[in-house]
Length: 441
Image (cartoon, helix red, strand yellow):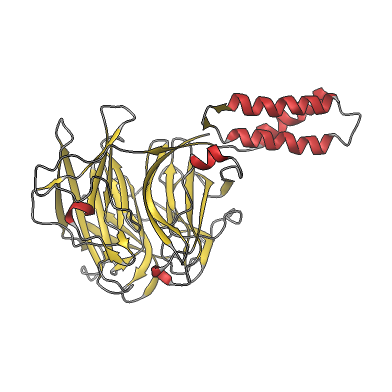
């Protein structure tokens, strides 16, 4: 009886002290689960005392790796500035979309949303809908949507499934396509976006196309035009992997772009991974390695491969590891996910993604997840898989729904997620919701 009473009180303790109103720590569920498991283990032994049970629970708890997640939906105030023809928007909020890009700059106060598709396989062309900003107001938790003014006539062609990353306060986009078919009008252009804000909610955008060259011989060797590739920034360099090539189909090549010299370097193909679209590309080991995880290679995958980055200026010593990544078996195979690297907590995060491909290709919507896969920030191996508690209506409401083809960005310990594709083949649904997810050990 004392064992039953102890476990009952621990369950109540886990729920009442780790849940703060509707803001809760996911760790509470692991605490409760550990108690329930221990109850089944120890109630069969009548000689087990309450103290030994508590000791065992404490030991088990210490050895279990746990991550606290706090999701919160952000609902920015609508865009209101319609005094300039270049900023007048047909809507006060972004259209629902998928296959877009999302970045964060200005010390975590400005989100930059670009491109994507509102209608399947059709890039958004409306100038007032292509580029959106979400600005955090005066250091508060309040945000506002802004359509920036574009004073220059030079802007990138509309596109879907491009790659996007930020170096400092500068946004870079590469590739994508502006045609309906997969290989139609694929691009390999690089653009740079700078944004200037005033003291109000106005902002000015300036686009510059980069005349990129190559470190290879011949010097005109540049990455193949592609879409559904991924890119991250490490220092002043951009690293891009994979995608669907205009000539070669699914790709498994890794490239580096130096934003200071505007030169591309071909880092070679992975000898472990098949060509794929929609992979996750992660910064590991405090930016000393790159991990490629998952993606669609004719089927959803959960394999991975690590590329080691040399600290030397000439890149000597950088190479793919001999074997593939270990410890990914617990992650369900998937592609077109949201991903983020969080070196301050030495973890990486993969959210959602497509786990069952659509029978209609890009016209439909496959099966999607809404779980959060936590990976070790050094090795990239899976530490745990976290889902909202089934049947808990409060948590269901405070957790993003199933989706793929979304995009995410990260600042310090927080990942931001926007939009994506949900629903199914009969009723595909594009989204325009904005979420933040704080991650702590």
